[in-house]
Image (cartoon, rainbow, N blue to C red):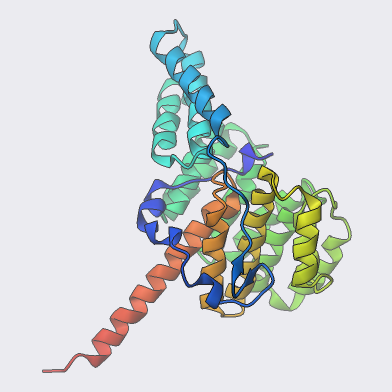
Length: 313
């Protein structure tokens, strides 16, 4: 499931080097996860990606010295691309995906990745074209419904996004993340129905997913303190899973702040979603994307102020 939720973009990483600086974050929001003197983050360990790095080395060796068919070489480039993507090395990942496609032009998964890269580079037309190719090659490629829905969502074509998000949701109604994206889209598409729809869908969610508790928070059934306490008991705070659930939590809290117009707190929470370094999560990737959009908005507003204050001749 984790691999299917990967997305990435090297361009956005270059545009947002500033996000690694979290100074001042604790002063811009006053919740439980972020307090005046403490930010809740997962522990980071130097060898956390050791297995992926070893696998990359082995695949690289096979590609250099192995006697391989085109299909075998394509599959190895794809597998190494996925590993690079999971480490946040998105430029290298894109190179490997492109190599895989040259060797095997009918790899639907590669078009899915490349479509996501185009989306996160804000090349929405190229992304849509790639996602449509996925469906031509494999009409049942489930996660492309999410990805194409995101393309429509971020271009304000909410009625089209609704169709794809709904298709994705009906494939697994126990998955809270499918429910959350439907809700976020419906807030734009039909806000008067969004909350009640979330209430109805929440009844089918599985508590095996951390996102179910985020949905309960959205519905007011859990306070932020209760959500914080639940996070510590849901998984071991010393485990890699704790970083994952914090990434998800900060992202969806940020979306909540963004939707009510609190841009400052949303920006802080998006940055904190990145701080746990879970590179292979949709929430990490789209936190980068949201921050890029906020940065563009800030730059545009500054330019407007300068223009308005400029003396006329």
